[in-house]
Length: 279
Image (tube, rainbow, N blue to C red; front, top):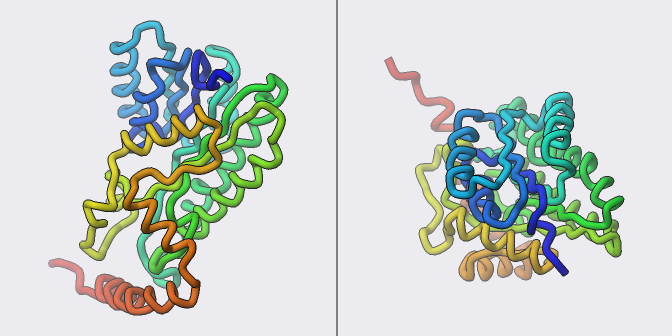
């Protein structure tokens, strides 16, 4: 069966950088049209120009849109549909993390994360999946995280949002069985993106190079999963082993292993919070 990416309209959120940008390049030679969505319109326009130069026949729409704003999303979908037709593939990639113990983290930041990682993903999916079912063709591809399969300290809200994405995607796949609409997700370990900068990494630590993969590798894994109709993919051999070890490991053992790390994180965050302001 032909992949819905081929000659389809592909909408990618969070397309201005990282995995989203890599996905746009990955599908540009196959899709009929790309709808690129992100808040940073200047970066989207630069990406649009790159893609148009590489393949002039490709229709590329760039929308500087905050996907947590439902009115803006509705307007974007109306404009995109009028110009290139219905969306065949939705890639819910937009999201961010926040590093810090829950009680010491700003609620405003947590609320924004839930709105972006959870609510906007569910809303966009709800808006677009109905027409896909009516056409008997399409795909929903969600970018989750290895933390959507396990857990860890210092990212309680982020881990919770990614568990939603993972469980939602699995259940949605069952709901749409037999409709012709594919549902898949990628659960990567560390990806070399702006994640740490956006997450406010106060620890000074970076993931081991052996665990990290490039955005391009993650994008290729997600596209292959859509093509093959797979439910879930964890890109990177080392990340796959580490994440699956966390899945099969007894919870009490994980809690025991993470306990000292959680203590250190709390001390570090308190030290950063209580440090005197520079003169």
